[in-house]
Each structure stands twice: as C-alpha cells, then as structure tokens.
Length: 231
Image 1 (tube, helix red, strand yellow):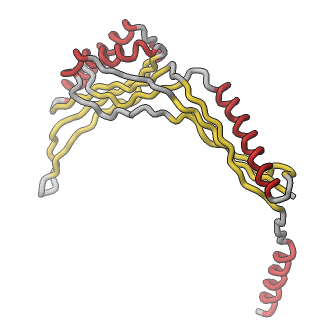
Image 2 (cartoon, rainbow, N blue to C red):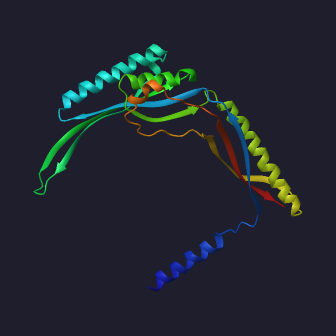
C-alpha cells in the first residue's frame, strides 16, 4: 500500500511540473463582410401524394401523374439532368383495435422530385404546369447564385482584414500592438429571405390563377473570428 501512495505522489508531482500556464496577452475579435446578390437559379421540390386501400391502384395513379409532370416541365425547357427524385415511399396506415389487432385503413404513396430551374423566368411555369398535371405537394422553393465562390472568397478576405483592423484598434487603445494571429475560424454563407413553402395541398383549384414567385435578393455574409497575440 505504501508503494502505491508513493507512486501516486510522484505522478502528481510530474504533472504539476509539466503544466505550463499561457501568459500571453490576447484579444479576440470578429470581422464581417456582406453583399446582396440577385439569384439566378432556383430549386423547387414538387410531388404527388396519393392514397387508398388498393396499393396497386394508388401506385398507378401516382406514376401516371409524375410522368405527366416530367413531360410537362421538359416541354418548358427543363433538362433531364435537373430533375431528381428526392423522396419515394409507400406506407400503410393502420388502426389498432383494443384487442391488439391492427386494421389496414389505407396506403399512402409519396413521390417528390427536386427540380433545378436555371432560368428563373420559367419557375412560375414549372410550378403551374406541375399542378396542372396532378402535383399536390410543394415542399420548398430556394434560390441561389450559380457561381458564388469568387464572391465568397472576396468576402472572406474583407472579413479577415476587418478582424485585423479591429484587433489593431483595440490593441492601440490599450497601449499595445498586435504581434500575430493565434487562431482564426470562419462561418457564414447565404442568408436567404425566401419563405419556405411546406406541404401545400389542393393547389389544383388555384392553378388557373398562377403562382406568383419572387426571388428577391440573397444576403451572403462571411464572419471571421480571430484571436491575436498582443504585447
């Protein structure tokens, strides 16, 4: 038992000896850069949901309507590569009885496709044509800028410079100077003001009126968090 106590004391002593306290003076700052962009591309998820007790019947109906949607949006000018199935499922719906047995109520089939619209002037036509061919689901509409990487790179540099300027200003106010950056991190991206449209059913009744869609503007914001050493 004495050997164990001596060993523990020895290990503790080594740990304390090796521990180093960071005495460097630091300042933490944040730099931000933002720009407003006009979107040139949209992504919309459109689907068909059918239900009934006969799974074969609802599948045939669903398949027919989805094929009709494909044909309609291709005629508008949407390329096949911009049409992608994002959700496909068939689920039974049961009612559980008091004796523990389950009773089939219906089957529900859902087929959702994600469509990329590269010409925003066609977005309203895509939505209206889909509804006219039997779509009863509109999961969301989102907008983006096709080639945004150079813009993000520019914002990144501006935000980093802003962080450094702020650090130097704070250091000067304390009678110190910035030595070097110790850590730097980044976060940010698109901040779309676009509302998300969820599960809009029974749209066929309003198809003749059209669906007004406005892209508005996107805010791209890059934030840089940095810690500088000062002396």
